[in-house]
Amino acid sequence: FHMHWSPMVLFGSDGRVVEIHSYYLATGDEPFYASAYINKPDGLQERIVRTEPELSYDPVTRMLTGGAINFYTAAGEKRRITVTPAGETGFHLGTGLYLGFDGFFHGMWRGALHVDGEYIADCQRPDVLPRIHQVRDRPVRVSDGSLHGFGIVESTITGAWPSLGLSAEKSYL
Image 1 (cartoon, helix red, strand yellow):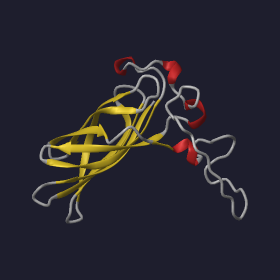
Image 2 (cartoon, helix red, strand yellow):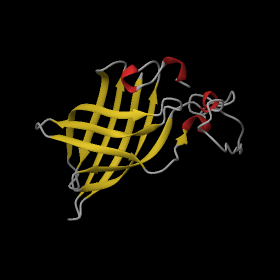
Image 3 (cartoon, one colour):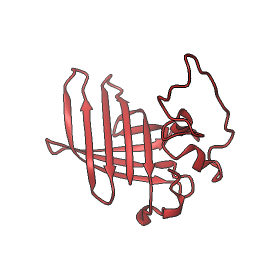
């Protein structure tokens, strides 16, 4: 299974602003669901009809390490968005109770006011990853020719993906 969800905003030196939002789900080389749009400053949306990720992931943590996403519009235009992590960080959604965390789940009733928290010093350790899952938001820098900006890539990639150098035993989901 390969999923990535990504909102991005790109800025041109001429003041242009382009937003791209995509959602991609695949169980092999072809997606079984993909939805993406280019949002323009005038409020119009341009539909992206095909998404081709060329992303790479760390073979141990499965954290996004970079790459590109190719988007093809209904008008036949190809946009190649390069994706570079903005730093070493990422937010593990498991700690926010997505997919569960220590027996608790997102949206679970825990009383009228329940406040808790925990600091996990190193989310890259293989002994920590099964507890926090691999679903994470990774802040990224994005570019498309003269347009540059920022976004988030939320990703999950499970099972063996030999073409990406990923084996089945390091899924952490």
